[in-house]
Length: 293
Length: 134
Image (cartoon, rainbow over all chains, first blue to last red):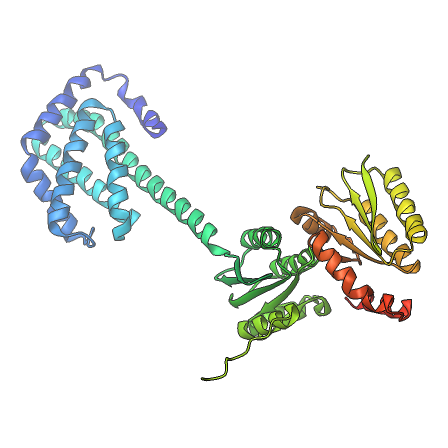
């Protein structure tokens, strides 16, 4: 933690304070139960961790408290970091927010500081030195927990982005040489590029002759994505496949006309059903209902 | 040998096996156009499946080749354009203006369909109209 180093400078001249921390730790261990309960009360009073039951809050606060005191004692945040990450992994899916996690750690810092005030309030210089020893360590802990939580969150976000990206552009074969690409959600530049990739690879893999791109689920596109879409249609034609685009919303239709896309090159049909029927006609399929009986 | 020009029935199958420089491309172009006359071909398939780049000169050469072939009475289809090449052509705004198909088989299918009328005696102009339409 680089953050710690900057606050370490005012520790240098007070060599004797090395003995203060063990004393402090002993004090916190001795009053463990009451301090922890006071902390839990404060958490409850400020309406933090509402997503968790009081029992869970109880067991987590105990672990955090013990970890906290241990870090004060040893100065080694590795175990706390691991614990914080593990805790984040458990509580993020429950909807616990960053401000709650930071909030409870800061509450604990305050609760402990108060108890130190109480213990040393008769000897102001000593209290000062105790706080000199306590504050950097406490801040470092708060920092470690907050950073671990945010890192874990970011890791989850990255993971989810990856899986969304994988799922986002399926290429489905519905008939021989006929592919469908349903697109749902926001079509941004990155996804449009991926769409082109998957489509062109799909044309080759399935030996497709007609592709129906259904954008019913796309509310709007910007001009660069619209241009990209047109290029995709052209590139598909170079690979010997014609593209039918279905389900254009009125907004997208307006965008395409406003940017002046050459519509003679685009084959568009109102809905997916119409698109599939047109594609079947192009491929020479005829769907007939069998005679009853 | 970087190119091969084979005659298959009424059609010429010209395959490019490696990237060609400009001089080689020009020679290839002349070679194919000459052979259309010699072999009285009605269709040309240009297979570019082995190419992983196609620059502006290359695509213009292919387009010119197709136009020359048309003037000599043969329809042209380019087959085997790789996905990346296809998108690069569009991205660079190069207008190929030639019929394209996925692979040799579909290229043959296309030529069969556009030259069917030609071999039963209808005029070459009809064929040209057809290939422009596509």
